[in-house]
Amino acid sequence: MELKIFVFNPIEVNSYLFWDESREAVLIDCGCFSKSEEENLKQFIASEELQLKHYLNTHLHFDHIFGSPFIAEEYGLHAQANDGDWHWAQNISERVARFGIRYDKEIPPLQRVLHDGDEILFGNGQRIVAIASGGHSPGSLAYYVPSQGWLFTGDALFRGSIGRTDFPDSNHKELISNIKNKLFTLPEETIVYPGHGPESTIGFETEYNMFIY
Image 1 (tube, one colour):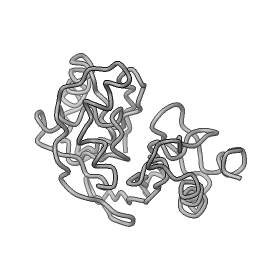
Image 2: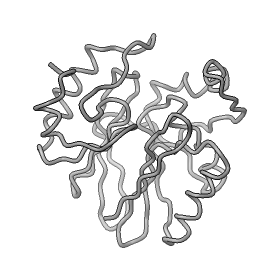
Image 3: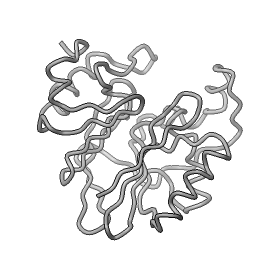
């Protein structure tokens, strides 16, 4: 399996694209904000002759969904995610305006509402497992790819840190519980791909992440 990491928009969201030999691909958290970012993603997908099969969101905070209208228009795919964050998507223009950002697109409705333990299948028998990781946001999900030992954590878990829990609908206790009781039960060699910043491993985080204990 191959993985390409894009860093999009002023808030520098990691957008992940991966695929196997079938050329069926999965995109996680499309943060494309500008036309040039959209074109960059489009050209890469075309150059690799990929068929975008699934579009997943770890959560629906605006920086992670800027590119959702583009994906819907260009590839006919709406996001699969948990709907606990849908209110963030509904009034996205108002929310981003508080940060001095103008955004006048509407976020398409979800294609599939995902819950803890749901599976997403693609390619030659590839499997992705959704893991509820709420706390940063109510609907946060992590995505685990068992065949590769990859874990896409969104803004729940970062290298040496955790997601913010100062939003009105955040829950610090819930976030810590989900990290310890769900994410940290995965093998130590599992590679953690967060929503922002560099990758890590479960082993590193269980030993050195001072925010967990």
